[in-house]
Image 1 (cartoon, rainbow, N blue to C red):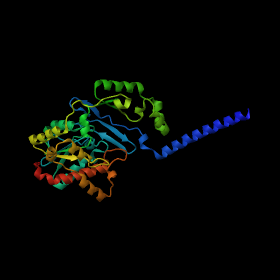
Image 2 (tube, rainbow, N blue to C red; image 1 turned 135 degrees about the horizontal axis):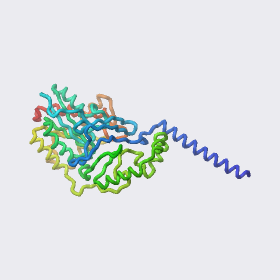
Image 3 (cartoon, rainbow, N blue to C red; image 1 turned 30 degrees about the vertical axis):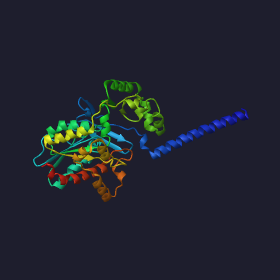
Image 4 (cartoon, rainbow, N blue to C red; image 1 turned 180 degrees about the horizontal axis):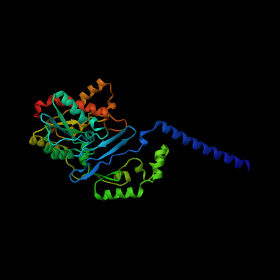
Length: 367
């Protein structure tokens, strides 16, 4: 073999060694860091279609929600279809009954039922009032104020509450502008769609593009493969068990031609409160990084006259006092990789709402 041939072979060998060492070092580094963003995001298959709401939680369903190495919770839906304890139709004598309605911040499926803000509100408010309090959670993630009104119309006559608390989050206005969404499960995947054609195409994508068992095995074993897998045409499978049109490359216009406005919906809730004789309160939920944004969204989407009518419980000041008492930073109330509150945040929110609500009970017509 000539000297030039030996030199070329040596250079190739060195290049191969460099590549192997580089990839091995990268894999070792990723194993040490264990970046949560490379983990598979798992949603619980707890959804069913609903003719009126579009979707809701499936009664008595359960499943795990796993996100970014920091969330791992077994979600249990009760027999009524909510992430809550079981509740009798009639309240026990002498019990103050509260209905809480809202989106994912109220459903709180990322934490155990007893760690949600509604359960904390129940305990804290009962202690402050010196009487039994029952808080019923009607929260459903991914919903807006239109759905919250429909839930109240359905369940207020059933539970006959003394108090209703609407937890308003800033994106509830955006949810009003989107076409009605449907959610259901296909095997162990959560499907999100607007119509039957989209659902058909999602199922077709799942059946024809789902990864092989060998691909999943490599995904579980190698961090570098997770990066490669997510770049493939079926990379959606390696990000989450949540399939929607946008995740599989479908162009979809989800804007409603004539979306309902927030202001009339709030007036319908106020009217429902008068007719059904319950005290109504609205809580603007503090958002991560911008705690006043939910309150601003309210101001920007209703008239000054309507805003003045809203019985607001703004938890921002008591939350700050609770954080100072516990030595917490603002971000300590939220998950690191997401915008939802963690168990600490929900506990603080429930305590803050109880502090604001307790003095209002006697004069609110709730007793």
